[in-house]
Length: 100
Image (tube, rainbow, N blue to C red; front, side):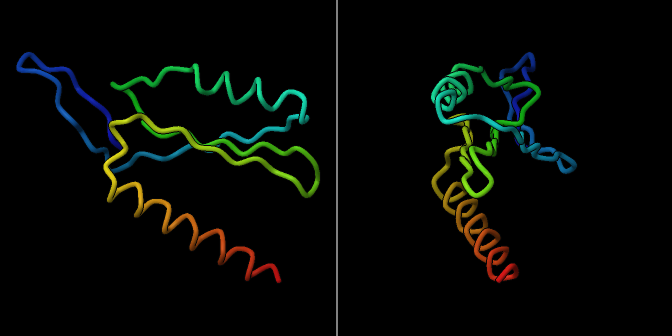
């Protein structure tokens, strides 16, 4: 939700109330996985448009997936980061409990 607006008096953090976090879904074979991750690492963030967090889920096989997220350091306030991972873990755990 956070992005940066450049104004005459300097940069200003803005938090959108209606922002969505897109999750990129794809398929990849194990041989190309490293190249996919390196390409994602090399892709710059657009600080003025956001989001400052990118999420990708790649399917390697029917029962094997690779999940990764990249965030700009602007996103890395420790409390926010821990809060994010806590709820990600809860969601992930709940999903698998629901399936079983």
